[in-house]
Length: 65
Image 1: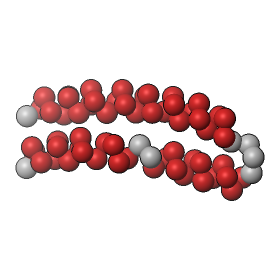
Image 2: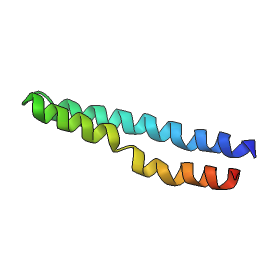
Image 3: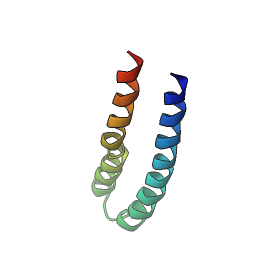
Image 4: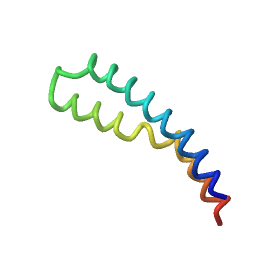
């Protein structure tokens, strides 16, 4: 069953790296207007990575139980 952990790492880590690069590029273009807008942008991009990873983690948890 340990192969699922390895597969999950192989799926999530590249996704997070690509997401971080894209988020940085977008945030770089959108930031600097007002502190409230910057805060909203960082909050949105800070939580936006979570929904796509939920099915992968659920798949791992379902197979472990």
